[in-house]
Image (cartoon, rainbow, N blue to C red):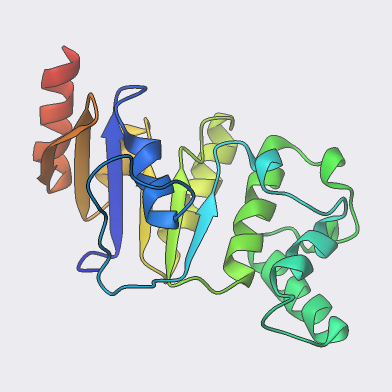
Length: 193
């Protein structure tokens, strides 16, 4: 992956989410093919609605569940889960029900679960859509601080502007692949904004 952070922007239905789902292997192409370089990149997927990926009812259990293949010891999984939660500012929520969390906290737990699996590539599909302004700012800072390469589909042009590369989709086609400023200008032109 040549750039650390790539943003994908475009109108609803333009193909942003489909691109991320293809990369993650969640859907297969209906025609053509998709090739990743390097092949077999281990990715982690963050959905717009964290409820779609939170599996366990308790925060710490959900994060530990993500490590079940890489860490055999339950006590080591719990310890690593606590470390990750602390980096998200959620250390005190380890034993909380995921249903008692705010939308911003749920999205952080979803990100923590993804990071617990140590992906080589993080894919985030409109991760700030359900968040208020404060939570959006906090979550964006967490995303920007990731060490793993990231591709984020977003309507948040401020988030897109912080990427190194921006892809613009229109009606299922890639119409721009550029630095943020010219790519966002192209999107505004197509959107008539």
